[in-house]
Image (cartoon, rainbow, N blue to C red; front, top):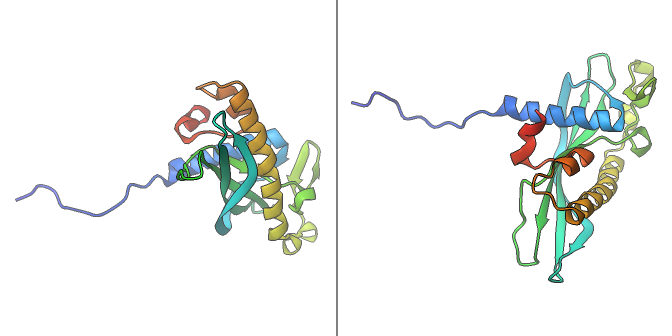
Length: 192
């Protein structure tokens, strides 16, 4: 007779994952001088793969290719109008016949009000979530415009990140990761 019972389950890492994402959001908010609460923080749409036009030419003449895995989220406090942002993760492919390398740099992108996040307004210290119902422009927010701004932003961010990465290779990547708020999952514990 066994002293245990067989069971089928998966370990739950929800709280750890939530803590990591929240830390990445806070770092991006500080970097971009944008403020909103994470009290109501829900996914809004599909997971999307966005191929980037940027390619890095390797010494062997191959083009490294990049794409972003992204999902749009809606967040804000009970008294705040909702703000949209994206959870993102970079994938890369080193040769045409190679497989996509998943789970690369992980980061947050928060579009500004000029990029379509209409509930962000100018506050004393940067952009903040509007609070008045009369200022709520959620119905006017164009998801399409936000996705377009994500692609444009990622083209620039990934290009600049990889340019510094290849220029000054550092196996610890700490300074480059901090500068761009783009962290490899195996080193994310350093920011917690």
